[in-house]
Length: 386
Image 1 (cartoon, rainbow, N blue to C red):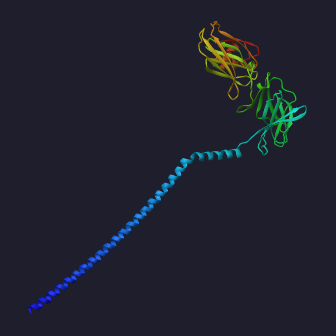
Image 2: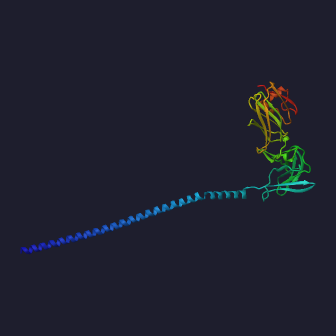
Image 3: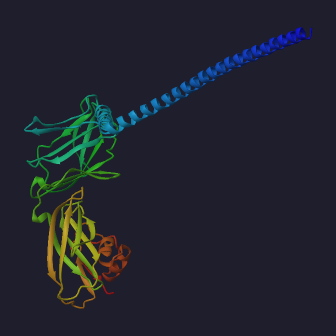
């Protein structure tokens, strides 16, 4: 009996152990599947995050590559691009801004009109102006005067020379007119202006004309505007008479004064021993005076003095050079000056005494009651004592 109970108990124990082992095995299998599922999920999640990061990196790299390509293109093709932009601006300027001109000159010869030069204008009709204006004033090869300008279309405009009306011309539909007298002008200085016949409008700008007594090439024509002068005809070939030094004074004050003649309204400059020391403007009567401080010059020293004539563009067109050995000073306290046409005491005082306001000293020394009234060829005593 006892043996039978032991057999039953042992059987029950084995059955329980098996159940426990099965449960443990089942739980282990479930845990293994769970681990595998978790591992696969985490692996797939990690792969997804890596792919997203890879996409972001690829996009960023693509943008960097595009920017790099753009910079490379600019570095390689900047010069052609710049040239294309410049050409484009030039094309716009030529097409819409630049105004081309042609010169139109009509000359009367034995009552026959000869077209010699034509002035290029815009294809459209020029915009009328309120006041008559000059385009050309020049002396031709044959010594004849040629004037061309513009005003309102189909209107009458008069040409005045030295304040006197010499001719009246009709403007065409484009507002242009021309004038050429049958006889040439005598050598000398002239002032030209315009006046509208119907309205009495005066030209805003006048023209100063110098007719040379040598050749037409030395004649000068200047358009005088409120902003300054503009050259219409410049001298080409000069002769010795177009620039001449008449007198050189060295004062015991260390100042040198040069007087002479040159083409009117041009500029002269003085160079002493290679140094520019001053400039002056030639008067309408071809006279100039120029004074500058050079310091004390010792007797026996060699020096070089040059006077240069410049056109309105500043170019040197003539030069007179004078080399000299400084002589002994005479000890005189005064020097003398002969008044020339167009002179005034202010300019004379500025040249000799450094300051124009000292003109009263010259007037007092020469007993001049009216300082504004001096005469050509009048001999003036200039006090130059230190």
